[in-house]
Length: 298
Image (cartoon, rainbow, N blue to C red):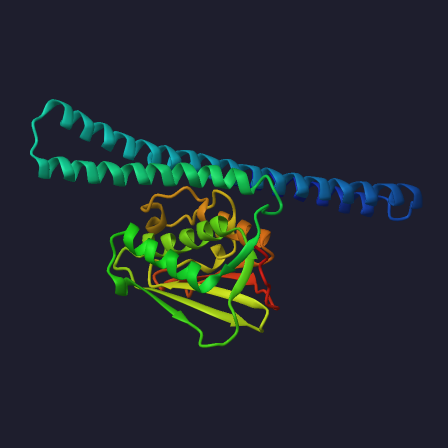
């Protein structure tokens, strides 16, 4: 990437120098000046655009390579673990307690394997359609509470590790959408908050209504944080913050891409904010609220 950038800058510099020289040599000649200046301007713009496209392509290839490496690790590790446990069960005589422990660990590894596969499949699925086909009325209070409970159970956390606060309001927090996809988005945000809190999980989930028209879910952690230049890029597909703290934690770079894609397909958006590295982060999911009560016909 540095090579292509330097090459592009050098070519632009040469083109600018030639343009200036052409103007100085032909400033009294109208026709060569009128033809030469636009030609060199187009040449400079073309070189600049080509450099930008090359740099973007190099970055995209780097993200793809990182994604393949991460997915390979996420798939290989649980498979190797399950294989080892099965070999142990096959060739050694174990008591019931050890067998049950092995079964529990194999189930956990298979769940991890399934979650990775589903995340990759879901990323391809949401990227191929602009709107979700299944639309029902969803109570966000219940959905968020269920996701918090599932995250606590799935990561073996104590109840006070994730706290949920709901804004005291009489307004219904109902949205229209696909419950499975919205659950996927919320579980990804909560999972990231837990995963990137290496020094202890302390996650705060806030559910509120904004301007009577939006339902907002904000998930705040006290983890490794997000540097300011990367707070918008983290929603790109395969993108991971190039930080030691992040790279030590395995991931596919698809979680937040799924979150924003699902939110926008439901007419909302997803944003991230952080005071910097080591200062935690807040990821918010905003969805349009149903403004009028809807009576379901059975």
